[in-house]
Image 1 (cartoon, rainbow, N blue to C red):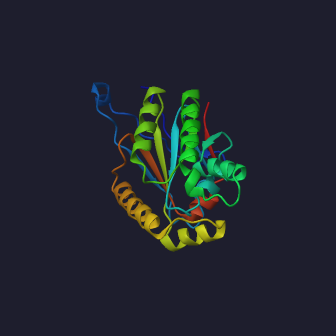
Image 2: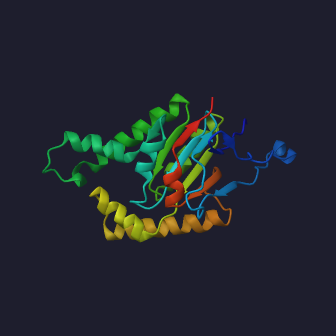
Image 3: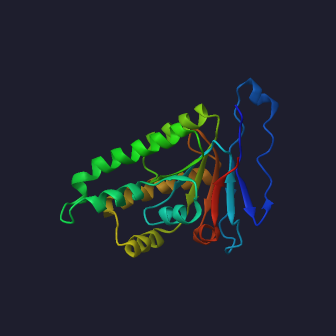
Amino acid sequence: MNRTTAYATTSALALPAQPTVPTREACGARPAPVVRDLRERGGHSPHGLLFGPRDLVVITGLPGSGKSTLMKRTVKGVRIDSQDTRDRWDARMPGFLPYALYRPVVRLAHYAGLRRALRAGEGVVVHDCGTQAWVRGWLTRAARRRGGTLHLLLLDVTPDTALEGQRERGRGVSRYAFLRHRRAASRLLRAVEKGRLPAGCDSAILLDRPAANALRRIAFTG
């Protein structure tokens, strides 16, 4: 497999790439995952993240943590965000119709768009709420088939910050759903901090709010 890696850039400077894969990988062993922690740098963190041309990037975090905002600001290429799909369907539906009634259609449309993007073979940035493990499995298989790598970008913000983000956008999730997301996000964060990434992920980048705000570009080489 042609294994690719992620680069963090400030101006034209590239940080050191993933260490060379040891010889034992030729016998089927996988290299250790790479975790880059960009938190607590006071905003003095990379302005750009570059990935391989066939890589997949999953952005995850609590509802209201700023995933969609980050994607809209930094991704000029292909991005698949369930919020974009919902917004398109909201614009079509009568205002009095509750979202819960057409939520299944929105989800189908979102996953159909993701499938089309994956089949195109280009680098893709995908919004992930953090609770759908089967989606990450799907992305892992897709990355392997296309000869790319699956990367995880994890937005680490406090629950209060995430709730404030929901209030600012005028849309939130139920208390039950938020607690479920919070538990899943906490488990994932603890695991990544210990170097244990979800199955299939070869690298993870941890971002706090200042680091996310400093980013101006998420792109793919080639």
